[in-house]
Length: 409
Image (cartoon, rainbow, N blue to C red; front, top):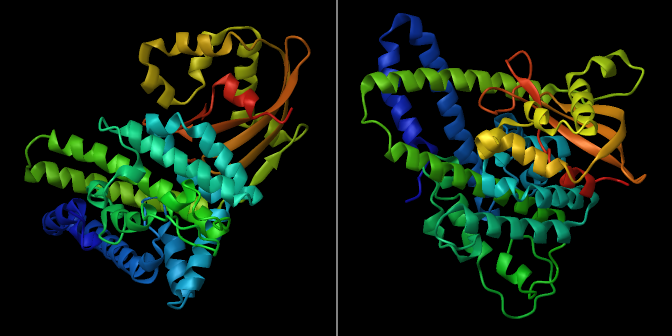
């Protein structure tokens, strides 16, 4: 069952119920008013977004910046073509797209497809839209096939199977609505340009002219919506197994929700205002940058074959995935790639909670490779968090084979 509006989401309904309780507490009335305003803002943005762009099958997902959506809606003056172009420009900002994609690594089946997502990003930035579309279609199909015990890819799902519990992609004009064109059959060869993500026609070779930025960007939009669907499925299962409802628990949840919304708003503003910075050797900020220091420690441990200690530097998602076996897993991954020397060339601090360290690796036999080490500043729950929130810089993509495979030689 799809939601007719954002107001129908369970979290909205629970928050509205709890707002009545918060208003009874004098010290909480300001928080209650602020929460009410944010809820009204989100509801209005979701409905206005779909009013303008649902016919073009764009999906409002959890990773879209509300500020960006507000700007698109305000400046497009109800012109769907202009709004679409503005939305595409947002996706074409590689920093913004990378930030939207960060949460996907929390899904094991998506994390296994990270190398393909990286290649799709390279193709997208380079304007190879035909390649980007094909790779992302394969990622979506494979991910959905693996994510659930029912082994069927995204293309084999009915729209009603894509209901997303307590998520804006579960809107009746969201993922399930857009899925109707995704699976629409195309038997006759079509040479005219298309601007929809017609998966079946593209994959089966009957649609030939899909090499454009609109279709490629819709593929990214769909990938993020599918990730939202997957997270929603997990939340729904946890909700069904949760303790029975109580007003006290609800009040606590709403207080947590208020804190989360306030914090996320501050983080979004930091992200939007962040100026990209690059530090080179000889610069004081280069020497003191925590990601450079982490990279030096990582590469020194690698060179000394102290593989187990590398576990202290990698993303906490890897610890969650491998548990107590993480050290032995790292050893197995690194032992076939001995390192003899290294040089750290630069630090590109492109996002508040993410940066890329470029290093030159010298391996046994004289082979060398220039690699990019992606570092994320994580909190205790592996969520990206910029300063001043508590967090540690950890290596996101840590497998040596993946680093070397994507090296520039």
